[in-house]
Image (cartoon, rainbow, N blue to C red; front, side, top):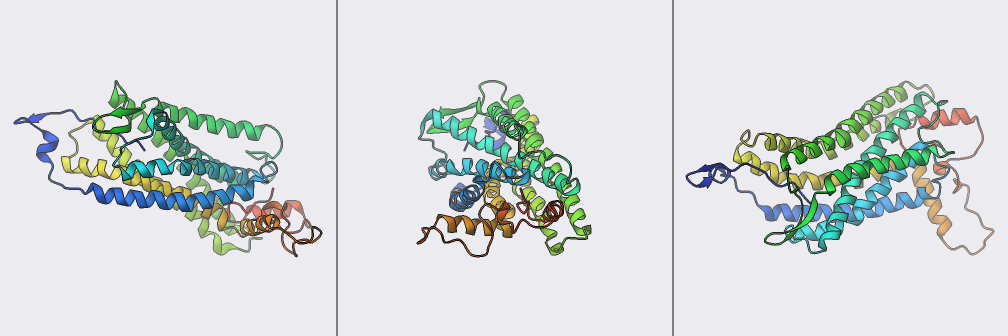
Length: 366
């Protein structure tokens, strides 16, 4: 996984660069490498299992799924993309940023990583907005309607926009031969201008914009659910705030470090040498920790939902061999019921309103 390189102007004091002359801090890169290896390995093993289960259970209903569940599927697909390429990053960390898989995979793996960087947060933001609108305006049309091409056009538009933003960065990713081959993001000209622009775009589109939507909508959802007269699970209102908290915890450290890097690039003398050392030392750490969203998203938006767990059990049961083809699963949820929903009786409008008031993001009927 490529990381920004320092671009300090070099001033000399008695023939010694200022950042060497002033540095007194000693940071152990070996411990960082071990920590990153463990983080990547954990995210790969746990995230692969979680997201594969989510896609497996929900993919069968993708054509009839409501907007919230449709976004859940896309979030898991996006997370699966970056999880699949994690073994390359694990090996890169193990060999101290030595890249042995050629220029093509250098560019492709970085492109996939950055696409996920944007797409997962875009779909999370749209999912939260869809959730809020379906709760407060149940009669209004869905952002991702079940029928028609609007769903696929909007979905394709978000993926294309993520691809465009990723290309802005990926065009400058290349395999560089220094002491050892490495995969880096270093443009040939105007490094500072390029890096500052990309970092600002990243801050705006990947964090500030989605965070504003996610936090605002979740606060409004919690307020609406708390005052809804027909909601039984008011004790679960806190879960709505956990959605926002986990998003902020995963991405705020990364963007804080990135923002300080922007300041350092604009004015290389504003921070001390020790501060710069800590800043660039911690970048790969917070970058690795941000990948915990691949583990947290399936838990928050799927496994905490009773209806998803029921649907998972039903899906597993239908895949098991049976002695008699006429035998049916006992009185539980039907496999084709929305998210393991129960019978079809009752007023559909009232059922939708009740399910929309649930704090579990996937507890929404199709």
